[in-house]
Structure formats: C-alpha cells, structure tokens
Amino acid sequence: MRHTWNATKYGFARLWQGLREWSGDAAYEKYRECVARRGVEIPLSPAEFYVEQLNKKYTRPTRCC
Image (cartoon, rainbow, N blue to C red; front, side, top):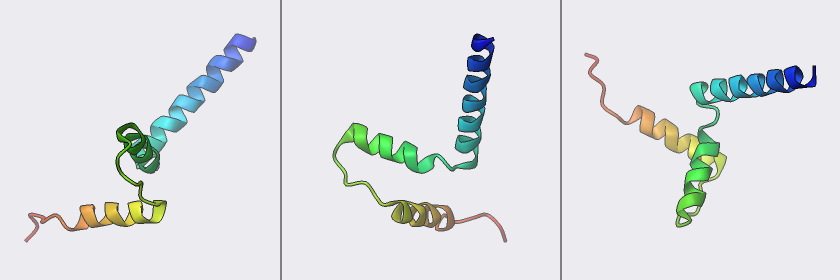
C-alpha cells in the first residue's frame, strides 16, 4: 500500500510540475537555475523578470494587418 501511495504522490508531483511549465509559471525558477549554472550574471528580481518577459513578448513585430 505504501508503494502505491508513494507512486501516486510522485505522479501528482510530476503532473503539477508539467502544468506549471506548460503555463509558464515555472519560467522564473528555470531562469534562476540557468543563471546559477553560468554563474556570471546578477539574476533579475521576479518583477524585473516579468517585465523583461512582457517586453520580449510585445516588442516583436506581428504579421497582423
């Protein structure tokens, strides 16, 4: 029974992480891991990261009209 419970908890944890990655909610954690691996940059704060992501999203030209 304990093995089944642990497998279920692991499955839910993987599902939750997948949903966070799909929705973009885990983007800041991934950014921090990447900066830590490089070890060169001073990481942005969560607010600065959010603004940077918005700037990247809305400064690209679109093909509409």
